[in-house]
Image 1: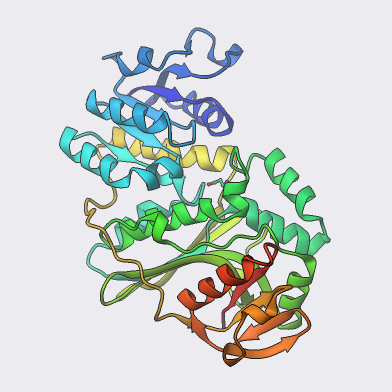
Image 2: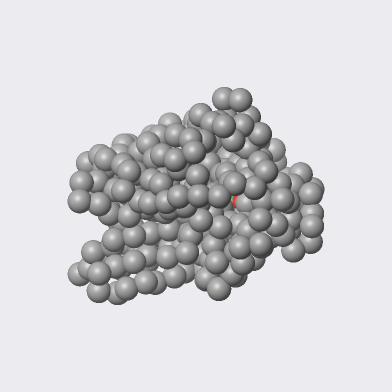
Length: 380
Ligand code: HSE
């Protein structure tokens, strides 16, 4: 294939270097903000040099962000080019449009690296749907936050030091707020749920809490309960629509999720026939993520470039039937009504089992007077 790269940052460089050893993938043009020896003779500042070049059959978008990524991807498809992207922000925002364009123009559209970094999660999720019914998906889907929580927990590191190190290692998004506030996970969950549950899960409907205000006392609280604190995402099929949410959770020390260290991710699907299947590996970083982009390209070259699931009718997201106890740490505990409180200890409290919807409503309420309030679901 004659391919072009849009972006030559952490992932783009990785894709270019792996592809250099593969005769199937010839990267002939590279759109980048700066030129260097590696792309000399192939570099351009102008996306038109790629999008208007009939010799280029495949466009690889690894720039990140929504604009102009959407404009470039849609123009590439309009021009009959296959597209591969690692960019979850643009896929979550333009999911329906991208799937529709790929069907209309009969071009390949793959984004395996957009969810789970180097883990072949989306390809296996779509494969497992065949002859089966996926009922649940979820797990740890962000390398940066798992790295930060692991470093705080095991090494007593400070939040901001751990974040800086995650940025240095190439795990974090350009704006790491997307990682620590859970937006990155929300996008990955929305894409995964859309594929798993045959429709379009709108990321804007997924309640999301991150780890920005996590303190070492929250990690200690988890330990007191023989648990570990993780940022996780869950979605499940319901009679009408789905439930879906992103939140810190306390997971028992004996659980699979508790043993996921560093930048690793672990995602699990539950299907009626297959039961539980878990996929673990590096959820972020140059070469693991680039490797998934390369596998998408090789799949396209082998004629397997169709998107994972063609259905895009909207899925209703409702979180009123999932009941869990929740941990809150807040300077405004009076914002949590007594009838839902199971136990209090200073500014920390545990609720009785309440719905995800109610927990997020309580958090929203207490955040009005305590923006540093922290909440985590308690899993058994
Ligand atoms: N910032 C993301 C993460 C990159 O840390 O997981 C991989 O999607």
